[in-house]
Image 1: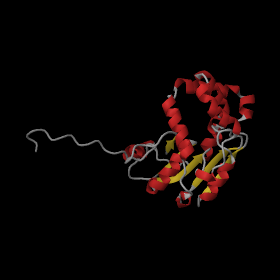
Image 2: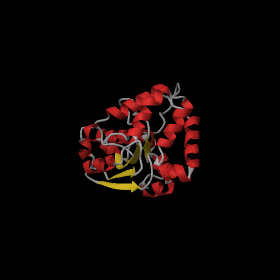
Image 3: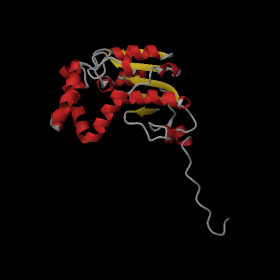
Image 4: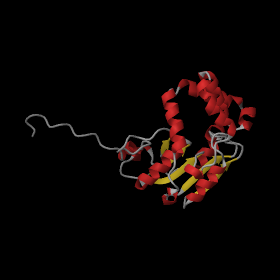
Length: 225
């Protein structure tokens, strides 16, 4: 199983780590937020590489997408003028559901600490935001025939929850799973449930090793040719 959570790979390469995992066999792909948009692109561009698809808290793209909730829209607008610490805290809170923030504030602190330990450059943040805004597969999701699970938190303040229904309606073989009260990073809030519903058909470790590309042969020594 591969996961998509960042920018796509360079042209000519299959993104999201599928190539080194198993170049000969399709795999299950999980994409969340922008990664969900990348996962849709991958399933369209390389359908032979994808067996099952899980799209988490993402959008159908273009005019079919429902707008971002207003508080987070304002947050994105003000983010360039905020200190790094304030921006980190605000986005960590926006990514979680209100019930989690109220009853389990430690989750927000852990999320903020993790983001602080792995800071994102301003260039990468702007590029990610732009890529998310420009995503528009023009309704071609109808060509994605792989079984797809669409997962959405009902209290998502980054991706409007109604996007999940629109996306699922475009996919020929889709099932929609809602996480009541969960926000954008629903797997931080309900990790055990998330793990239960994600497909488990990924190869075992020995199989992964068996299907990895073999290292190139060493050049023949002088006198052995």
